[in-house]
Image (tube, rainbow, N blue to C red; front, side):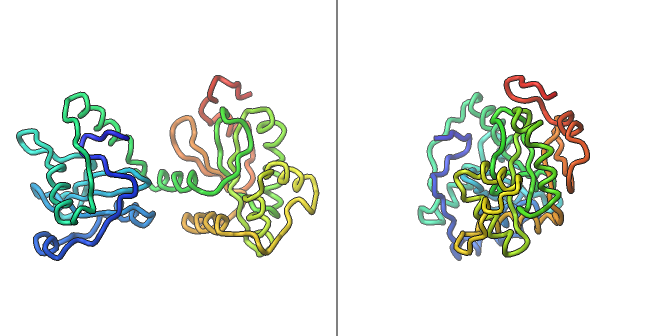
Length: 292
């Protein structure tokens, strides 16, 4: 069980509509755009009320709760815990009030308020906010896409959207295959997509195949039977990948995304001109595997 300074919400936390009494006491303001993005991605949000001129919100996303306070006028917002002038945690009281209004929908455990736990919880809270910029939001979406792994677990990672019938994808994969993937220098997480009925079915078959790597390599080598375009294959996973491409206006394949050693998210449209440049830009491999 993960210990938070404020409260630990039980797995399966479900939000219910605020009672009329709560709506009468506090007019619920609009969410800031950054928090609305979390809600659009599936987060659940509840209004905590206004304290000291700050509108408080609690969100739960991918099993993790966070607390936000919006400045008057909505020009800015803070993430973390609210304290009063005596050092008491206002956020805890707000959640208790929300729990009482929600007829037990919220459930939390007693918390340790020691200075050590304060520091631990604040560090965890600071690290938890993954969506600081559009690039970080995009990279998080890419990480959560449906992908197939090629290469060593210890190697630096790149992601690439590929269509089974895209010749540029084939060329890029051949660039990677023997000199980088099979030598353990890079891990490719291929995100299969399909823009026609045939390639959509092939991509779906590949994503579901237990021997995806073998079949993909056979397909690259000219085996026309390696990726059958069967009509009964569930394409939901590929549709998600296509929706991701559309959401971020990715309009070519291959489309390659990775995090450079400087911490910035990088995008390469089409076949990379130089794998050596990419390798030089990637962070060091785990375990000290050489990159050249």
